Length: 456
Image (cartoon, rainbow, N blue to C red):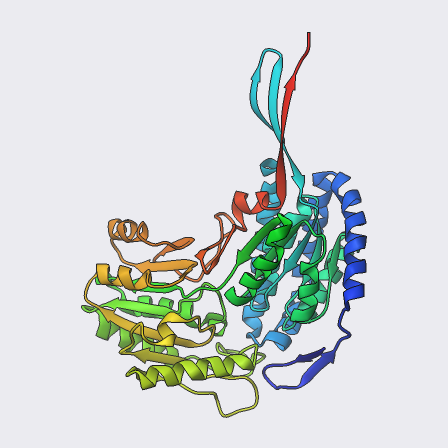
């Protein structure tokens, strides 16, 4: 498998792919190793995870350079991702023990009812390339703490990072037969679907997630899907600092080149402030520095996948054909690498792909609305349901509108953020199940009820 630098289009490295046989052998080893790992104390398992976090931060410069070389995000954003991963690990370290502790459900004379939590067993973590550290630790860290073994399938676009994760976990004391990374593309991932594993946790596109879900449903095992989004933002007329608002919205749309499942992908602005907001938004985006992700000050690097250039080009052509106004950008950059200009459209509507289909790139449509109810109807006009953002200085307006959103997360005066303190997941085509928070820890265990009656 060839690892390609999206900034230079050069081959960084060639790696031997796993085979059906090697994947099967790895999973057999994990099945044996999981039993030994499970009987270790939770304090011991947490100590190994803590060591892994320390190793991440201690080698952040090298790890950031590797991540940037294979996915193209600016170095500072790669470093921020690793720091963010360490913060999420800290949450799991501090909270897993009490979440997974034995609980008494009921107690009376001669009778005790309690609940314990047991690991699922061997789980498959089929992960994503856009935030391999953040997306990865959401799954494999609580899974390991809970006593599971993990077969980790990194995206073929972030394989080098996946191998570094495996190496550092082993250095931290997680046995090789408890966490195993496998190398390959989609065909290698499919092999996992036919193996007798105890859970599947996938992050990626709706198309791939639907396929995985259909394949493993017959097994009756735990399956969670964190899929895409077409995340909307509404900008109410109840805003006074339009400059700050536009800067925040632009960053939410274009950070990591828009390659985030929770990136802002469509914006609705109240007519009273539409013109001012648009002027400030376009000005902000036009000042973004594009270039090599290893250069200082660069905010827009290359896309991670060459094929996404065609997706964005198709959305641009579709929007123009249907009457949209191109305010900025609109085409692939004339340079080596998978670069696409930051693109802003106005005069858009829901007949256009840019407002209805996931873009996953530096492109945004901004639509003028006459009131909040029109905004709500447009925001809900989607098959996705990951996040929704509402910008208003009136909290009551936010709460009224937020209750109408059918997304897994609602943001008030913020966007494109994930916190370990609250559940992360979506509805509809954005998937099901939760990672992070208490719910995200419990996702990797099965409860066992104990009803114990004392005989006289």
